Length: 227
Image (tube, one colour):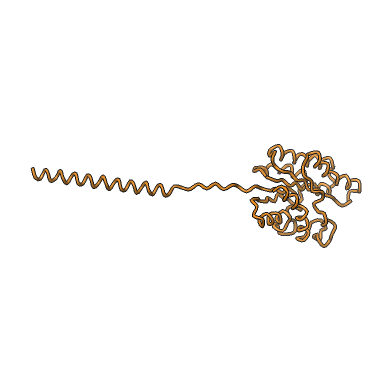
């Protein structure tokens, strides 16, 4: 009887010990799980400024960060503003080419869309009606997908290689499109740069780093007003 009673007491002690031990391990396990729960942090994505153009935007002949679009990013960073510049420039691009590749750049909504195309159309003597139509279609496509995007049209001029009449009519395309589509117009992107050998590469068309600094100063007030 005494042996049986002792065994019963030992069984109770062992059961209690195992129960406590398991409970303690479970508590520790739950504590570890709780401390490993990930903390969710939601960062607001930066708004984008998309420069969509040709070799002028791309910064032909110089480092991309020294082109006017890169200089806009540098100014934004220096001011601590929450914007990211996307350089959508492609050397040799025409308005038709720009229209065909636009969708790829519109996967995300740009806060500001700067359209800098048409110069290569003019240098190649493309029909003015086609250039105007393509510029309008690009604007319409951006506005249709993102109605809140601010659109800026960069005006362009060309040398009179195709005759003075063509040159004059080409110049007028930009204010016409800007008025008809109700977008902001930079009257002439290369103001103070075009025709100055000291501010252009040997080809006489593409700005040097110093030239891009001037282009930046022309563009920046239009950007600054919107951010």
